Length: 151
View 1 (tube, helix red, strand yellow):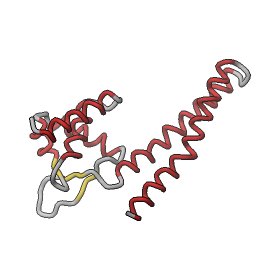
View 2 (cartoon, helix red, strand yellow; view 1 turned 180 degrees about the vertical axis):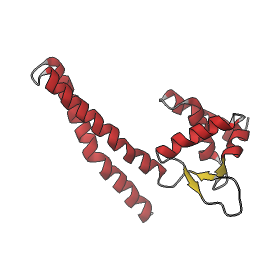
View 3 (cartoon, one colour; view 1 turned 120 degrees about the horizontal axis):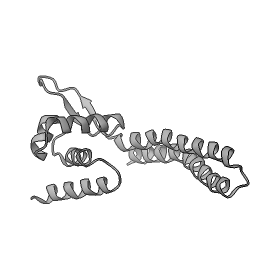
View 4 (cartoon, helix red, strand yellow; view 1 turned 90 degrees about the vertical axis):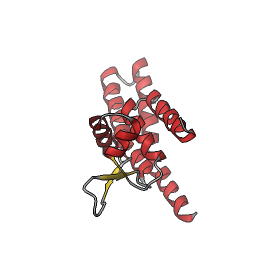
């Protein structure tokens, strides 16, 4: 196995250990380590020796969070995909919905348990954390974008 293939598999393993489905992690790693700007699903399937269906499912999942996008490929009959430069910022931005849902769930829990209860205090801590994250995430993405354009 080459150094890059080994590094890609290590990245995929780390992503899997942190909650990403195994095939999706392997497909994302293959995109990240690709030496061409765009890749077809068939090329990924061949490289990873996995089914086209597995690649298709993984690509759909990665598109939904903004880490992969379809790109035009004039003259090709196959769909081409790439990791967009803004992919990581898009991913973090989509987390806003999850963060907001966690904050709302904590608020509902506080209402149910009572603010002065032990559970209510725990849930208030959760709510306050997610409220802080919700305020900070957009600024983090904005600073990252500003730093990229000034480099």
